Figure 1 (cartoon, rainbow, N blue to C red):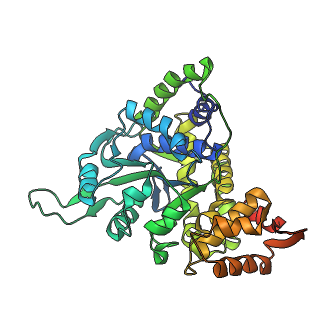
Figure 2 (cartoon, helix red, strand yellow; figure 1 turned 135 degrees about the vertical axis):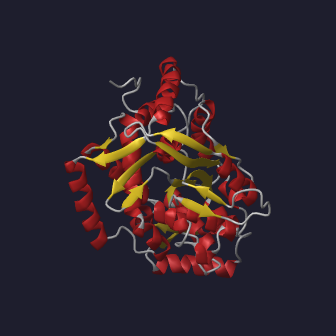
Length: 399
């Protein structure tokens, strides 16, 4: 019999933070990342010759002021309170490897009774660009290696008294950044490959709602100790999960369908598409642990995981909207975002607003490109020249 106090941890967490300003998707992925952080490498799903663990690389993306850090805050506090090991936000590669090495722990599999060694670490960074540094290819390479949960990861060390390998690596990453910082921190050639292909980018253009006094109600405050209690129970879980027959059939049908009809054609997301099945299986593990301790992935678990993934993917292309070899790509993307939000903007306002980013010739060419792409129209109202967003641009920004 389960000792859980919440019917589902993720749903109760969303209820707890309901009276706050971050977008709902930011709150949701905070909850998901918290459950993943507690499951560590102790939980797994074996599918034929492959083994999947519930680690995710999740990055919240949005302009300054859309409450990314606010969304992450309550989750960070809960993980800290129950003693989940997390990496420092600003660190060197050597310090990060050291943190991963000393995170090694031994756990008893609750189903088989076997002792298992693992090195599980969560990276929780509200400023991911600070954590990654500028074009830090070595750290990006390490994170790429760690995502796949190697049984033995080797590294160079100057201290010959220390082991130069770590056994059973497991790294979970939850961070936040802005679209412009993605462009500055990541080399253009690396986008779509390696590390970025393993990241689930969660994009929102603005905060969810306005709360004059974002104070939890008495009922919501009463949820906090229950959430902490259940998070401890999730942290104690250890063992192999399995599919129900119905859940496996749903996964198999989806797998074959998405092979023939991928969700994106943008080459920047081609690597992500290849790893969609991994993301879905990891999410399904987390959905199962969120609701109980039967170590079973049900049809409802995988349907729920798929629904979350599809909803997140709707805005994912916007993350890289300003990334490209065209130096004006970033400015064009910001103008598109402004038009999508406002609908109609005066030509003079665009020229003034973006004058520090591009000269008038470049801005004029951008507006001509938007017209040629049928993303915007030019209308004249008396002496005013108006740039009007088309339905195509609203659809692109999901507004």
